[in-house]
Image (cartoon, rainbow, N blue to C red; front, top):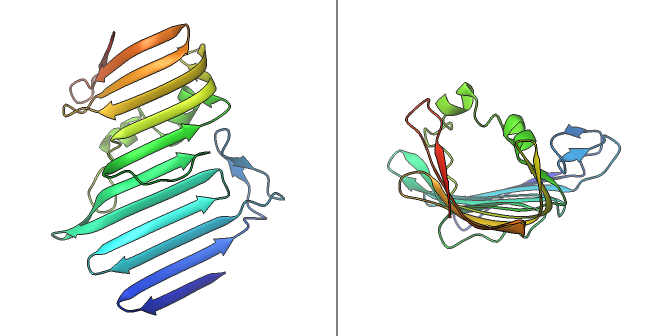
Length: 193
């Protein structure tokens, strides 16, 4: 079902579906058989040069974005993409929060196209790349580069140079990881502390 509401200068579009009949062949836990229900809600409101978008898929996924007009384009003010976490919007910037029983970094990177030439040269429709300012990850099992890490908690923040500074706590690893991007087309570098 879908509704469009215009009231006091605000236009709101809301659509709901149980997604029965649609299968999702994503990366765990983003998988769903066609016969399974997954309540989806899409809501977008627009008013005076700003808009807000909220998407939820059961308790599995929550997305909230707030944008404001900046010249001819809409610019992200703040937002969150949450997996198995409440989609609480940060004070500013873009936050990705993940809480999964198992998180395979390589599988997610491949599914999202991260690290491919197409990903390096693609920008969004309004010319603005999605910039992730903060990452919060909790998982009992993290798979990365053929290795398994147990009971991982990671918090990462984007640096001014475009890299990330992260604190990591897990069985066998506790400390700091810094990653800095390389020159265009070149691999970046990491440092441990």
